[in-house]
Image 1 (cartoon, helix red, strand yellow):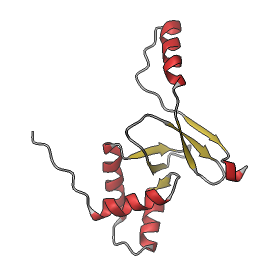
Image 2: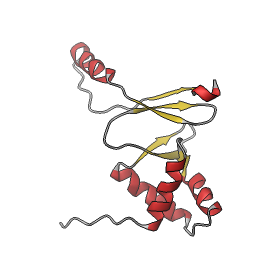
Image 3: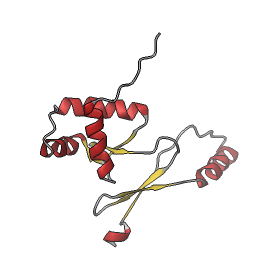
Image 4: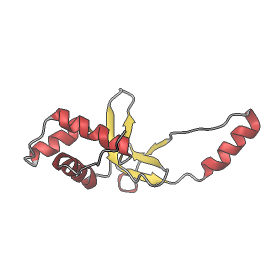
Amino acid sequence: MSERTEYITRPREEIASVLERERRFLTASEIYARLKRARARMALSTVYRTLERLRKRGDVAERVDDAGEVSYMLCAPQRHHHHAICRKCGRVEDVDCTAIDRFSQALKASHGFVLDDHAMEFFGRCKQCQ
């Protein structure tokens, strides 16, 4: 099987630009609305396809809220981290969690359980919203 080259397309550039300007999770509809305001010519289906491709590449993080709505944020793929999300304004801060290594070792020692993966989010209020 031959490996396909990933080209940087205009939709990818425009969507990445929207995500770079905001430090919070955005739904595909929110991204689409911002693109429309900026007079970008793109279908909502293109936004969804592009976000899925960016997610698979590790360029965006995806989260599902309690209502089942999916949102996306540009994320640093080179290092594992978690997110602290402001419940008031939606701003997101990256949180390193080196304590997970100790927790994983304790989980294995106490329960014989080997941790393959994990996901954590922290909710509260950012410095500006306190």
